[in-house]
Length: 467
Figure (cartoon, one colour):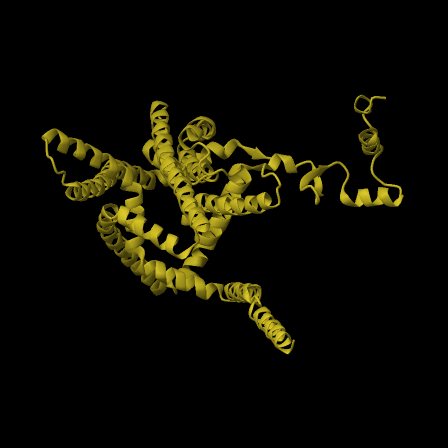
């Protein structure tokens, strides 16, 4: 008996030790990790808010140092379709020549070099075709600007605004502007001449530095196009090694979708702007519009900026044409409106499609925020970058909705008034506070039409009850 009691006590002691050793520490570690991550994120937000200028200067310094690499990545990204096209033709040529072992490495290098040479050739051709005429138009504008202003003033001599003649008003304002310019030249420009000379010198140096970075970037782009498969494989290798399978698949899908959004928008917008510039040149040349090529270049270049681009390009172009003939300026404004309608409703959708998936409001929001943060580059890239952020947020929201067994279609939420927590379905009809008032016997303040609809919904269906 005593032996049996001792064995039972030993077993109970072992069970206690085992139960104590089975204490699960993982939930506490997870909570501690979550608190630590939240604390670090709060510190990061505070640092960004109070040290934004320092962070911005650091980012600008890093971008300045990495400019050749960034130019190389951009050129390689844009020229990749050209490189792939040349590579396919060279591989077919190797098949025709009957080579058993294709020199794929040599063909890839040669295709990358030819793609970069194509890029240089296109830039040189555009400059050689456009710049002489643009410079001629600018020199003609400088020579004829005083006479055009005098002609415009004389044409407006008979115009009146109420009791005042437009000519008198213009002369008054011109005298005020002249006095202001003289005062500005004496008190502001001359004392700060050294600063302006220094800024002009630094600007010229920055141009040469940018040209040097572009040349180095072209060399970098050749290496990027030659090694793009290796870079892709190494990136996926790191992602699969560090993340769980499900998270890694989501990250790969995110990069794939981002490439489709960003690449489709940039390449499509460049082609769209080229077509708009050519159409503008053809029509303006037919109707003998002054400064045809200069205006077409301005319209085509500014059309790269979504939403605001047409207005940005039309304003200086209209002013240039207004100096020659106000009637031509009116014709140009009408033509630009028609051209942008054709671009927005026919040409743009055919080329771009729904590449960003953003509504007009979010496109305007992205451009305004991008221009405020990064200037002209923000206006160009704000729309595709915000489209990628929008896609990430949308994927996250859909994940949590599916986790709650709720639908992801936005249309279903327009008329929804709540969620039935027990069955995980959307509720339509009365809101939560109205339901509480009805259940407590308090008279609801909702309109009579809504009350009648709710009474009809509460009445049982006679067909179903058999009455």
